Image 1: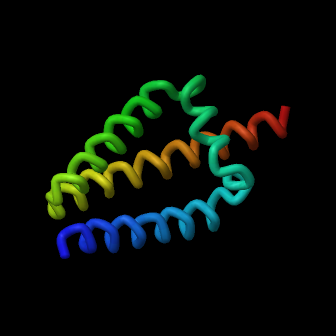
Image 2: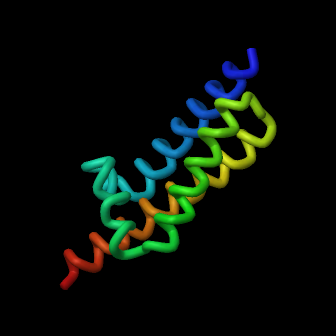
Length: 97
């Protein structure tokens, strides 16, 4: 039951990320991997934050710490949106140049 709580939260979070990012920055989602590859070079601190939060969320899921998983995975979702937002701005700037 605990893992289901983590899974349900994670799936709902992914859905919210898709809706928000798809509405605000659809150009950044043409290739789901591109924003994260871009972040490694252009926003390394944000990429490190994303990696750390993803690792922590994975450990919390495995250890069935649902409340803490929800908190950390929500922070991870915020980092995902920040990466996508910054990547979209980069694409717009590149297109304007």
